[in-house]
Image 1 (spheres, rainbow over the protein chains, first blue to last red):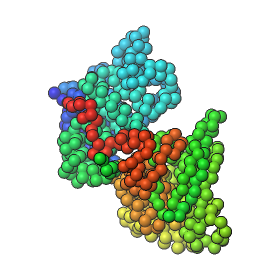
Image 2: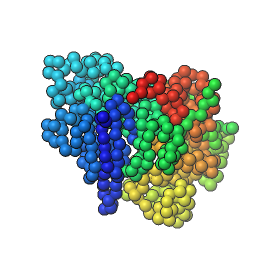
Image 3: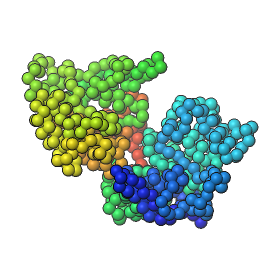
Image 4: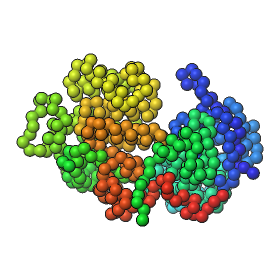
Length: 258
Length: 284
């Protein structure tokens, strides 16, 4: 059974008085421990889909089933309980967190809000979460603005896994990181996926990153699905015009390997 | 190839909360006239500081040591129209003017364009300021530039405001303004980093064409080694403010001398790299 099933999703906005479809009849599924990537140029609807799945905005049409339940029909306590299983990591954790909050505070929030640990137990939980994402538990006392970008993204991941989610939406989560840090964060995400069977909705403009970590890819163009399939098969041999354009535009390192 | 400028033992420190933080440490390199030179590095490597230092745009608080000397001969070649400049006896020590001798393209075109002025006028003002042309001639030159950067509808483009343009189109206008006075050196500082892959490729192609057509020297600052390699004749690798390696693009890619350059190359996730999923033997 799929963790997430999106059917015929649609969202329209108005631009200069005229309606335009940001997301138009989009359907896809993600299975347990699977990474589905959304790729496409700016304005293709990637982030709108992320926000619809997270219910930060409401669709005009379509259906979202999460863990077998009609996610759009949930409200109140039932929605809050289900939301714990669906987490998110964005491009810039500095924008997502209060920069003056300590790392401990950022990780304490989800544990407290979702009643996952008593006040006495929470420091131990926080230390365990930090170790789980490869950080020194001593970092808990530091402020968010004092730690490096890579450490901050690890804290964002620790916060996301605190509530034991079945799905994490990663919206350009590694795009702002240096390449050396990026590789480590991707390795961490793969480790967590293997061990906790977390599914990822992985949004990226970078086909190289998608090819490295995603099982399947959906390529979007102007709010519609242009093509989808096995990530490597699509990237090796794209069929749609936008897929071909994205592959052609990706910079290549032409090294004469021995 | 003759040099356009010589950087010798350049160090830059920023004052931050009363403490001096080094941004560049003893950088020496020559920028050859007419070459496309990429400066690559990760955050904190000093690549943007180097670009700003060359353009004379460092903040007042910056503590600068070392020298950047410009070839007077090269600068005058591009500005034979400016009669007030006399050829100096010695080649070197000429002060370049930002906008006339150096064009600078920043990452975010919105911050370098005036939001309440039509883009054609913005380009024409650069032309009038630096080339001392009449307003009518400046506007004619601006229109030619708008055609050269290939905005859609070049006739109406002159009267367009920045907010009516896409991110890629704004960057094209910023590039037109940067090259309007016919600078000898074009500096592009992460000029394509905020754009999506397809638009990035278009802007790189535009920069390549304009640099070739006008015989400009290009300083291309990027965190992306693959993008830099696609454009540059030579690549400088910076790390923590130090020059790690400088070489021909082919040598940097195929025979890097420094372990850090190799690490940067290996960390690049290209379309031919081995997927991480396979390296870990994990699959759903």
